[in-house]
Length: 262
Image (cartoon, rainbow, N blue to C red):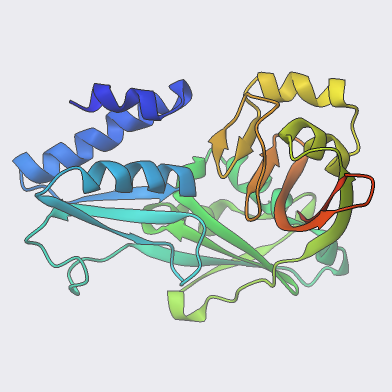
């Protein structure tokens, strides 16, 4: 049945659709409870869509705090209480710190690179919060001890790690560099080229190669119109959010406020 759903999803997502539908069917037919690793928002959307199509299954999403971007899912038969104490989401906070002054220049990507450099899979890691003097990183409990024992260096800076309970998590304040653009249209390629200061021709290659995502979904159509609230990322360049469409100028151009993630 789920193969009929392929038309709703990008071809790159069919592998995850298969995997998620298998979790849903096991919950329904075998009364199995499945705790996934961390899902990105697009994967969480796909899973929720599939769960909603099955009358006997429900799921809970949790990333360790209220506004988490990456979350684990607990999938179970609908008679199971997903908020019960025995339904543990199995997450820990990996605190990374150093007394070295140079440490303060480290960014999200530096921590992520150091963790992946240890052979850790991306889906074992939730949101990373860069805070003063270090970072707090959500990780699956089965990965926590390994990272605690082995993460000793981030971008040539020696670090110490500590495992903390979720109630000790410190959140970073999201820094957005705001810029206002004047564009001829809301086409994705035009706005992406403006934000990342690339020529229109230069952005076409990564877009058509599937390296650009809108709301975490691969988007290969350069002419796709963007709208307020859209989250756009391009591999190797960063990401931004369309904060506001402010209106049209006398010359017929559109003023758009963008928030670029620092």
